[in-house]
Image (cartoon, rainbow, N blue to C red; front, side):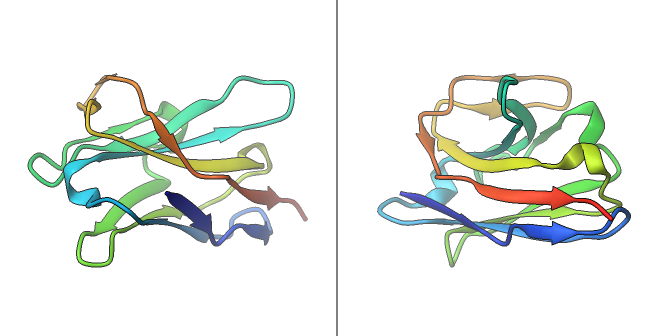
Length: 125
């Protein structure tokens, strides 16, 4: 099970840190991905990180230089740090996990099979 938290409202230029707590499995063996979705649009990848054996990362273009992922394997929690937020970052953010996923510098392979329920992020003045 994956549970996201940390969403909310923030002004443009502000920051938020989302958390994704895993339970029922050892997350260190799984790649973690963060996705977002706006009503009426397809869910899109924000970034992902391979399992603890690799820790390689893949970023969507819009996430580079603004968003980062980190993981606490002891607590089975992953974090999405979002800085310099823009109104177009408003979306529901989801975390996902899977052992089949590999996140490379300019690509990722595999399909995320486990998903959280999502947390809303609203960026507005």
